[in-house]
Image 1 (cartoon, rainbow, N blue to C red):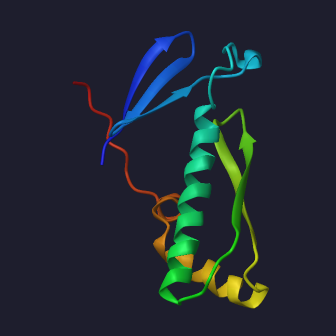
Image 2: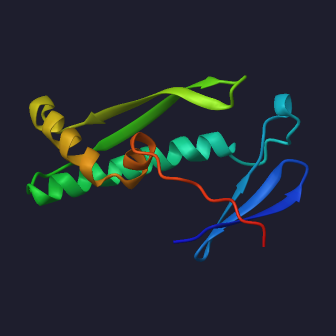
Length: 128
């Protein structure tokens, strides 16, 4: 799996994966033009969407019908150290609470993004 990022101008970056394209930027208070999501929002989006899909997968394995599923991720930032200090995943669904608790535990096993955050992998930086 691979994505590429191309700097456009100022703080705008064109990110591509397969045949999809996303524009990232910073808001004016961080010298950007606010033409796209901030990379940190995209990071939280990755966690939210991956965990939502993991919940749906866990439900389908158990043959649980899901009418509605919403996942919200909030992140507390330590701006000085350029990192999140806390991530909160909120799940809203039509699935009964007890069943949903079980699905959340199971989904934790299937979510690549949350597993990578909680069990960090090394990052190799290469000059080409």
